[in-house]
Image (cartoon, helix red, strand yellow):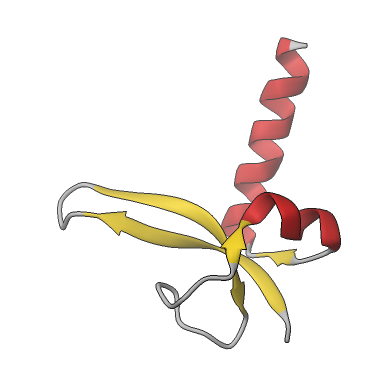
Length: 66
């Protein structure tokens, strides 16, 4: 099974929010997810382009604060 990190859409029609989750790469966007992303990123799951850019931005922001 190939695991990828994706955004999972939650919320209502006009107020969406997203969670980063680990999903089998063959499943649809809001399909059943395996787990949240932290564990799988450490084991080598491949993030989508959007998730990868979000992770990079969060890491640079954290580095600037420290």
